[in-house]
Amino acid sequence: MVKKFFFAFAASALLAACGGNQSGSTTDQSGDDGMHFGATITADEAITFEELAPKMGEADSLAVKITGTVGEVCQKKGCWMMLVSDKPGVPEMRVTFKDYAFFMPKDLTGKRVVLDGFAFVSETSVDDLRHYAEDAGKSADEIAAITEPQREVAFEAAGVLVVK
Image (cartoon, rainbow, N blue to C red):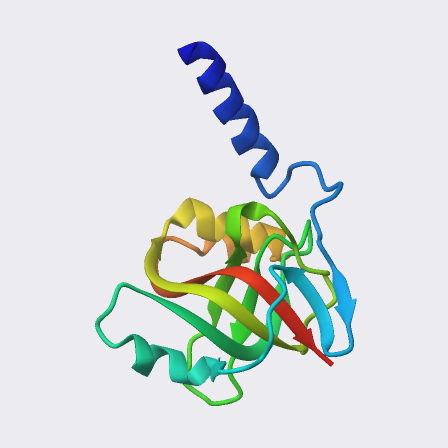
């Protein structure tokens, strides 16, 4: 029984990994208000990406809906994206997708999106940062220059709306 559970868990983890099988991973639902991925959401009551840090305050995590601009998308599969600000000094934020149940189109850079999910403070390991840099198509020198973990605010989205 334990072996079956472990095997099922290991198989699920492998399939959910960024480099896993791509079939059926995107749940695009186009509507009058834009394209939906994951849970269908609206832009109602969304705060801006720039308002997130002050709203979080000292909290480790926060259930929230935010809107922002996509700066980069994983070019291997669309399994993560980065939100960027138009304002100087605001760090970019990595967005992943709940349970790797859906992925983003690779051509979203510069598009406005609404995300519904959880913002949280995390420390990203050097290995993960290098993996993300590789997915983004960075050079070997840029990847090798990553030597320190990074403490940052990240976001796990249950639903994404690409605003037209």
